[in-house]
Length: 404
Image: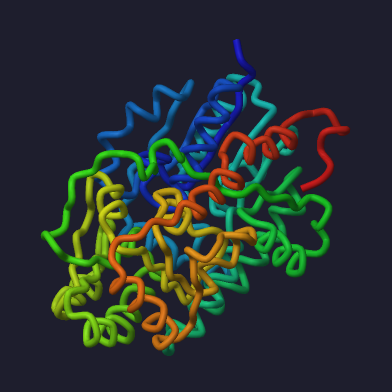
């Protein structure tokens, strides 16, 4: 029987339809091929419950805790009294803690992988095991970025969260055997913020299922005939995505449509916030909500846009669009974590004028593909190759633990 391993992501890693779930799903899939994985996590979206059996098939024991986000928000406020980051009580659950303690003892678990700093609290008192932390991004820095764009009192709350969460991240990195991030840039940032843990910091990049995201597939056209489409994909209850599409729809798109009236902007993603739904009132802007398959929306779009102004790590939306051989226009923030060499089919810009200057010639020249973008993805973003770094840190052999 394979060696037991405990895996604790902060939300159910299926379906892999948003950034963190894509990474946690592929990590679970990789681990389940090598270990008997016992998984404990939360389900924070009712639409994810039908996929519970798909997750259980990959696991030994599985503990799925329903999360009421309203209750969790109220519980997080206790952090104001205890002096801890609000993220920690948000994800604190006595039932899950009891399950973790029982499973570790029952199976004599000696290897633990934690996904997201908020879940580290469940195994802080199990130092006998080899504990690996996948921070993914420097979340504390994300809160600090949020503070810069929010008004009082939220800017103060977010600034506090950034400061206290960094304190906890540093504690976890020093306590655990190894910590991973999604890119060399994220790892380097954390090394600056937590120099005491520099020797334990590593990174492995996200990947793309290039067979699934293939331009060779046959996809029904979800758009009206003769419509030239700019598409943005992503979870639309996530603040950086909300900020991105709001800026693009209000500041950039009207300038594009003034020069090319046939162009439409589609916002494709689950759980659109009220402010996102209101963007649909802008002529030419369409908000789809959750879709069963994002590939048709990418396949039949003229190009993909990723106008994120607040970003950390690697944007899967960019990788998926490039894997589909689409031309991409993005901000430098959206491209920050990617390796160099993504080619002429992927352009960056920070201002509305730069977006308009690149996009107008693209939409006026008819359908185009970006085969060099797909080749670049195939070369650098293979899940199996990238996840080998995690396996090296799980190994008890000290000769296999060095390097990033």
